[in-house]
Length: 208
Image (cartoon, rainbow, N blue to C red; front, top):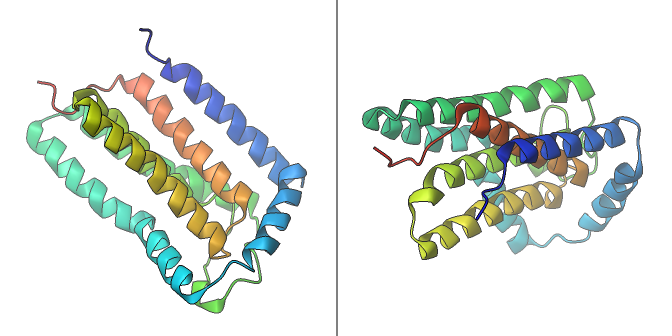
């Protein structure tokens, strides 16, 4: 069975990100959809659901994910898995730099009607939570999946798909991001990690 070509995936994700970026910059169809979904999201709130979404959003805070990445980096350092360690460091730091710089360049204002308890600073596009949660999840999957049994690999895949989707949805629910913000963030993270995966030719994490 032929393995998917990571170079093609990275180019695809880059193309899709650029399309979203252009749509946001020139107020295209996605921006219209953003407003429709945003207005609908204002009616979704319930106290119990607010608490759940705040907790999910907290899990996706880049600084919190950085702590997990730091533990992983120390484990790779102990195993002397230098290429994988380099991959992890570049994945996380590179994604953080990319989304921060693009935020400053695009300078899109956040939604203005969110509750004050969810207030966020900084610009809106792309979502840092979405970028870093997908970066964390994809890097984790690429490193661990080749050495896991089928059932464990399925569980890992489920986590790596559901986690960034939940974090991204929580940002829309809390009213601090538009749909295109989280879509752009996820595409940016996917592009960067897939690009590194073929540039660095990463190997399974436990391979001698």
